[in-house]
Amino acid sequence: MWVWITERMTNYGRFFWLFLAFLVLFATIPGSLPDPAAAASSSSPVATASRLNGDARRVRFVADLSYAISYNVYVLPDPFRVIIDLSEVDFQLPPDSGTARVGFIEGFRYGLVDTGKSRIVLDASGPVLIEKSFAMGARGDQPARIVVDLVATDQASFARVHKADQARAIAAIEEMPPISARAADPKTTGNDDAIAGLLVRPAVPLPRSKPPGELAARDPQRKPAQAPVSRYVIVIDAGHGGIDSGTISKGGVAEKDIVLAFARELKLQLEADKRYHVVMTRNDDRLVTLRKRVKIARDSEADLFIALHADSVGARGVRGATVYTLSERGSDAEADALAQKENRADIIAGVDLAVENDDVTGILIDLAQRETKNHSVYFAKSLVEELRSQTPLHRQPLRSAGFRVLKAPDVPSVLVELGYLSNRSDEDLMTSPAWRQKTARQVTAAVGRYFSTQIASGQ
Image (cartoon, rainbow, N blue to C red):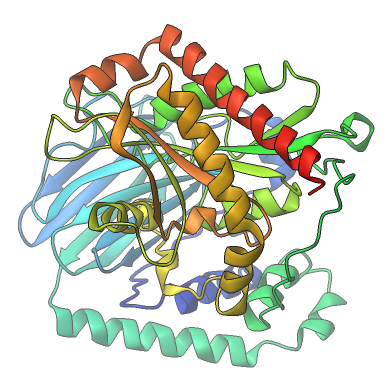
């Protein structure tokens, strides 16, 4: 049994270097990761229990598993979090797991973050370091366990440890042979593409021009023989997921569940019309990063991108659906605040992509505004008109803000806030199957109007 244990891995501000360090470690420690083929042939381990014990100085986290697996543990700042990365785990923990505060750990969350990957995130009230961590195999009637011991520290100590870790990461990268030389070494095969993508930033492709007749879909999730032809490709993006629940109502309804249920209903109704092929950014309870959502839209050569969310505000009287389009300057302060909240959603999962450079900057943002903004705005207006007939709308239903998920430069995109989970009436509607069917029909009608207009105008 190989167990990969990373101790005292810290990061004080730049996720980029930390991620590079992990790639280096993965490439240089044999057996540090589970074999994908073996993982695919066996069922996922089950997490059956968890516990936190400690005080204001030290806290121990323990997770019980059906069998031992490899893991990676590190900490991140702003806000301070302890991240435990695992292969895919079936979490069968009690519903109240992670809600209690123990010492400097305010609680924890858990869930899928990508295909074959799970994550546990412990929220810390201040800077924290990993004193030690270890894994134990099952023994007798005792389950396998992952144990992480944490100690509270101060900002200066945190910064000092981080600086040393960063220096080691840079030194390790500089000592690596050239990628071309490592490509010939079978021991390093499998890591080169990822490392190359970080060491040498590839050029961002400019938005492609799509002729009126170009309707063929390229969906990487389907076999070539099944790929539809002469159909519009629509990407439906159910927000949040996995470890990131999004907004949670006072009644315990999670935004991630509301939007996924609606996305499935919308897909069903759209694909009843043979003109459409639908790609889902997620079709289950897993987290998809904002950057990957945009990539799915571009890789699928989408003709339209629809992101789904459910909002929440302090005023319970505020309710109704809202449709957003991309703008670097928000239509109002509330729209800007919502965009900032959604753009930081990846922090929940332990990855703050806000520290990275956007794929879409400078001239590409300008191209997005000039080439696709008009299409996005037209669809948004059509959608508002369709929804207005039977669905409650916000007092200002058509708005704009700088949502990262809408930044595919060549895909007309809108973000739909289906309603407010802070409003009981909206919550009742959004949890109603009848409302989902009716509202999905209205969105489908708006999609039909949009593409019919496109064909009529020769665009």
